[in-house]
Image (cartoon, rainbow, N blue to C red):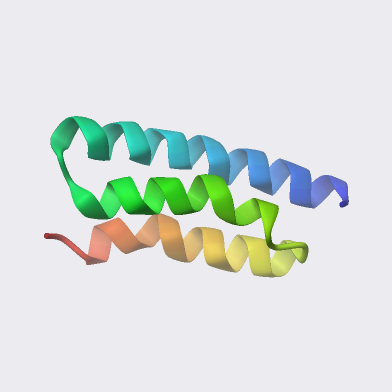
Length: 67
């Protein structure tokens, strides 16, 4: 693991905590699921570029998908 993976993992994990709390309080499924995914996926992705690509997609997903 390199430094960029750790920093991006921390960044997306913190955003994931925010999405998770927001989704739980508002009873919104999409931010809740995206929050959990943002907290978990850095453990399974080792490439920094792929980490950023998946993270940005998961952060943008609640904006485009609304239930």
